[in-house]
Image 1: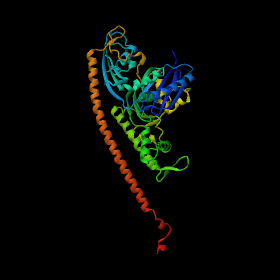
Image 2: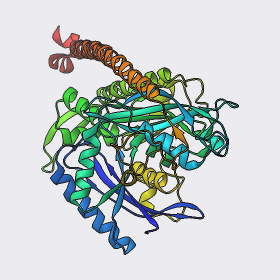
Image 3: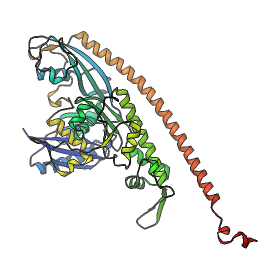
Image 4: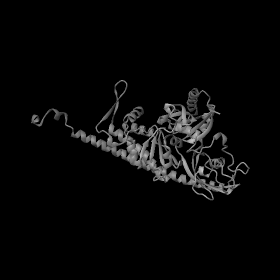
Length: 482
């Protein structure tokens, strides 16, 4: 059995592969490679062939680094939408005097991955929030192991989404001769890579701003309390700049990276960026203040959505470590000031730092956060409770009456779970309908504000033009005219 663990991050801007091993100093990343994405949109594979070519190339490079073949890979899960629901369950043990074992707890978690959902949906992560026994309430998984009792009550947070997000990743791996080890949510992996142990214990929100999505994970007492995906990221800022300034996407991306501050109060008035191509001819001009206002508007919208997720989670007052921001689109100057003002929390920008200091240099880059976290969660799980896919029969029955397990879940409890699932889906559909209405209202308001801003800008330019002296006035004084 190989001592290495390999993990793939299927990002919208890049596909990244990290390989690591367990050492006395923590997880050491021994190989990191990435390549520009093709065939991936918002974390979802849309062209298997293009993605397969990228993965095959990255695997070859990593195998050359570690001098052995890679056969099993952990993958990250993302997408346009991530749903969640609370799922309580009650387990009656067949032998109340027997010690509760780690394997027994693992079986309880594994059963949650088979909860009844819509036909095109599947569970991505089942995270236990707390356990109760006859004698203790509100205990953690580590505290539960070794206790005795006839009944276990468990509260889970279930994160789920479309089956195709996982199945198409499996298809690509199989075409490359690989098998799936674990599938872990991207925001959980990123949180593991960049957060410190005190932050995860005391309460923190992780915000990973990528190209097409912004991923959020709220962690308290080393437990993931909430995770969500916002379908906007750095690409939305680029598109806004392109639309407002009427320049090419390439130029919009360039000036965003070089001059994309996000606080209007720091913008220099009456300064323009002259865009010159290779032949030194002009490709247009962009007012710096207009650029900053455009960047600030979109990032404010993203941060407002983050604030909503934090508030809805019920942990706004419990994340005493504040908010940690990472991701490829977290480079904007003044982002700390903007995020602090909008989120009302202390802000820190972060890159992977919890790995062995002898890891390859690229592993410490902000772009490597997700794939590095996937390796960490594979070798020494802390936040994720993902099951080993190759050992888990996804279609197997959720109960067992053989002597190999110490608990049975009653049929009526399974029916309660299914009913709870149906109610949750109805509630989610209603929330999605309301969210779409709110989104339409916000978009209409944004367009109204943009139209008002353009009108004010036009009026300002007109006033400046009227106040400027005419060509005649510049050369002749009143006395000369007389």
